[in-house]
Length: 90
Image (cartoon, rainbow, N blue to C red; front, side, top):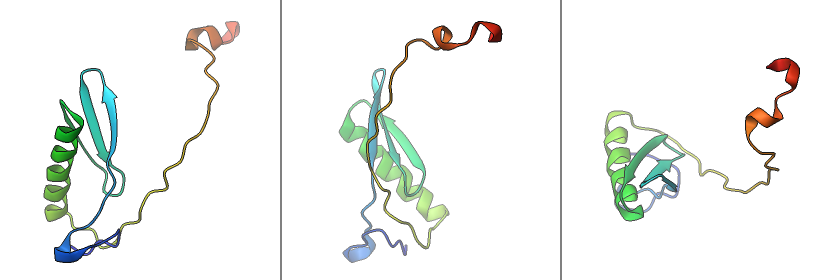
């Protein structure tokens, strides 16, 4: 495995896990590779993501990857979408 993103000793690579709660599960995604998994806890979701990413990279090795840029942004919440449609579009 020759990934560029923070490669450390023994061929290990540090990747990013983005975790969100969806209903009663946690969903973990790796933006550098494109893998995703889920679990009942954050730890389980990340552990499952590690396994899924490792298996994916065995089958589809990546030569390089870059670290994602993580930022925040604001949006104005206007309300339910149907209130925002113009009458002539209905």
